[in-house]
Length: 80
Image 1 (cartoon, helix red, strand yellow):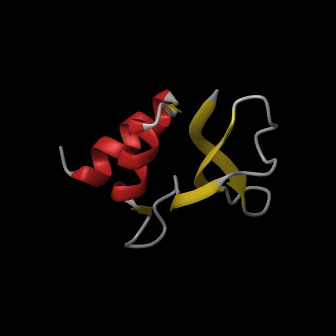
Image 2: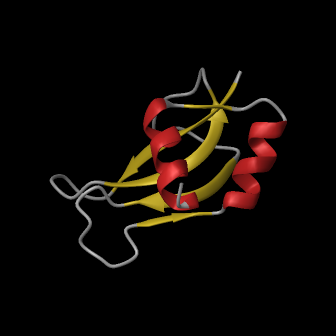
């Protein structure tokens, strides 16, 4: 199954996440199919969330399942 989920990057105490498409069996920070955007949970910059909504819609249309956190981020990015 293909999932849209977060992959952690950044140093210890300074988390940053990439929003990626990956197989559900891979590790959290393993290889991914496509990078869709990024998310800074600490909101240290003005652009703390960036997401390519066209590609998200494509992956959802072919059956990719977003995680709960990613569903919330998609709603925030689309302005709903």
